[in-house]
Image (cartoon, rainbow, N blue to C red; front, side):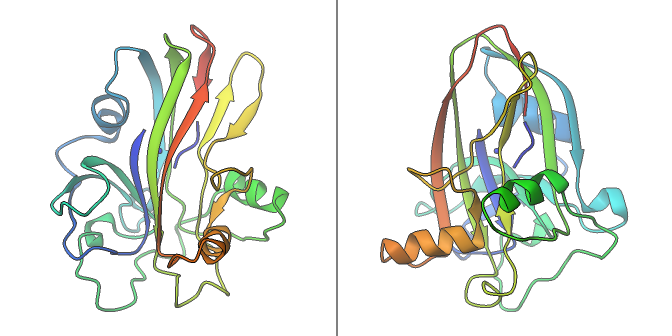
Length: 222
């Protein structure tokens, strides 16, 4: 499954609640973030954890662990992925954040997902987290929050995006589970903005709980 995440905050970068979270990049290694934080379940056997973020390319680290410090924030704790310096996530954010260097590349899988939905995108500063897992239960759930600084600033010029790709390694079938509720539309600044406009809500942050059925004892790639 190519991430982007089980209890997961995706920040591209935006601070919606002042000092809503603390972010730590040293308590857990990236594999530990997957096995101890993201999954943390006896019903999933996790292997082959791989990741890519700015620190792999001489730029900012976009992967960390967050904890809630504000009762109004929708998640208690989890993994945070960012297209910039993840340590800037707690804020306060009083100016435009632009942490990623041009040496930090994008992600082709994400571009293909958006292209299939009619959204043209040349991605940069992609943070990717992926691993294999064998499910013991047929039920698979994850909760993610998508937020972006592009709202109100660059939402017509750029489109931050997020995909949660689940691949059955036996059949080779890949499904993007990160979609607008009730649709097959992928998550991006443009699609979330249009969803919120339709529902008369300010398009700044989207919190979604996703449920999927999997085949027990089959190996999946996330």
